[in-house]
Length: 391
Image 1 (cartoon, rainbow, N blue to C red):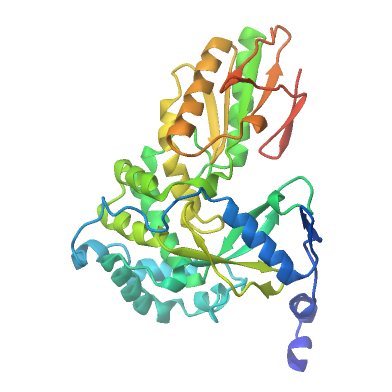
Image 2: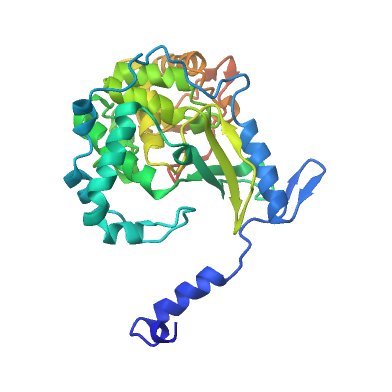
């Protein structure tokens, strides 16, 4: 330790050690009704209860096997092409050089430096997992960190569960995600800007802003509707997701593996340095914070974007969807389409949080409705982290 602190990087070393040993409290006391949680164990227990309540009732933790093959294992050549040692090694070399939080003794920092030695054994393990559609139970367990979204930080309802998984399943997921994006990237809606190569939040804002300017220049009026899904990532029904993966063109061997990946998942809550010893089931949704989760979600809603009426402008960043048009009749048709899709796909909208921004000097303020309720307009709306002001 003394030699480490005397190196040219001693300041960085001291800061790292200080960060690791310092105890900090990032979450204030939580209140739920008359219950007040002040200790980390009590907070973790309350968060676990809150996150469990986000899942729909009466869902099985095991997705339907209607799409599954009866074979005990897929032919080796179908699985072997996904994880050749050179692909695994290249993926390991591109890992970020960080330690991070993992319950597994290995971390990215160590794995990256052993890339050449680990490539072959990991290739064998990954190939066998895919071939047999079998995911180790330890890969299905997540450590959930509550991340504050907005609103009162003392309310557990205002936190998002972000999953931390061990490094080896994340490496597997990285390779699978890369393969899906390469083989099926053309199937995604061009108006989906989330979690795809060469698309970003910045691209989404630039695109929508240019559309606003063009429409306002021609028509002098524009209405923009911002949709809000209820706990979108937690509500995705597994059986329906698997059917959509199959329809999207995901190879059957991957769909079969993903079925096992989604089934019987569990989570424990981590608050600061405390980890709740109990585990909770995950009957629906895709893990937020995982590598595969966001990609699975945008595949799930891809058919929604394809069903929006022609002539209606829209863009999406994952579940943040907005419709905009100078024509209130056409816009109302699009609102009805999204509301119907949300009901049919068991991904309900938060109607009270769906909002409307009116722009333009000739805006007639024609009422717009969602499920018979008037959509409230706002003077300013936060759009992907940036505020839009009504004019």
